[in-house]
Length: 467
Image (cartoon, rainbow, N blue to C red; front, side):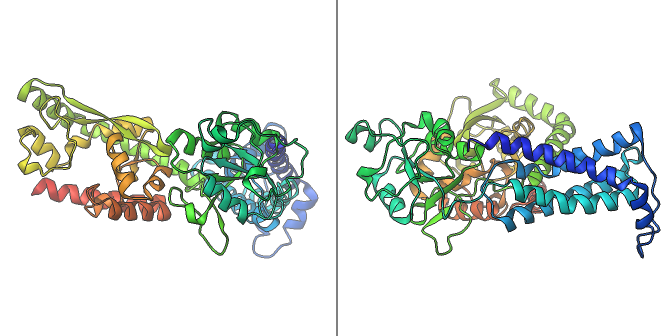
């Protein structure tokens, strides 16, 4: 952990250096002469680059490779084959991006022969570099820290580990802090021997010190042991694990609040801290921004008409505001066109046709889903996505958590304007069924899957509008 920044610097400098070196070697005359003798591809012409032209080609290659290899800059423990496979896939992606850039914009084009040679070189050297500098896994779990407040779960985790338990961190008001008093700490150089009982487990502080503990004790793995965590504790811990490149694990019997990568035969299973590949995440954000921006622009006349109709009907406010739950348990304010009488809360799901508080304009905009248009602004801001689990209002979230044990799994992705549950006409009145759809979406999510859901939702909205 103490070498985390050294790893990041080494990985970035290595990618830049190897990319520039690959372009330099591709411009060596002797290599170009040898390349011409290769069947099939040897006919590709070289365009030797010198001075500013070489600097431009090298910079373009380095920047594209830097962007493609972003997932490898976090100092996560990786085995040799895992590091080599991930680096190889990302370098291939970078080569495809370089070819695509040259195809669409000749200004940034690398000569085809240069691209082939440089691409072959980085395809070999960059994965070898990441294998060389990778953080090596230490046994099964390395140096492990237990974070939580539930003695029973801590005991299960302790029994499942073969060694390397450094200690535990918990909220100040938790059982251990109240009952046991001050605990001895473990020196940073300790080898992490296995305590036999919870009484031998050292308390390393409260959750406010988690970042310091992860660095000071060079933690590889955090095992979650929360009973009823609040959002700040639970997702604050996961966020720290993600930031410091630490593996998060949970006991399989206590995995109802997290997304896991699969159970297998192990008692401790990995928490999936990154449901989206970083490149897919960028593409999803680009899609969200384009969809919301174009939607607001195209629908602005409709929004003006609806706003005027809402205002003229009863003179009340145009927009309805409500606190909703976002990703990782945060909250944000969502806006919709007001469809009910002013200051009346829709606390219970109701049938629009029988709700006396729904206005005449409100009945129309609800039936046609036009009341949802202002949420495009939340998507543009980044609070929501076009596709994802529905954003439940905060009070409703508490009720749904008590009904569906796995409800927190929805918090691992941004809420969406539409989603798999929505297009299957499943609402929060059926929390277990809705949760199954939401978790299925999280498992299958991709940009292509999002597009299919959006097309299906537009079709359903069109049908509702016509009817």
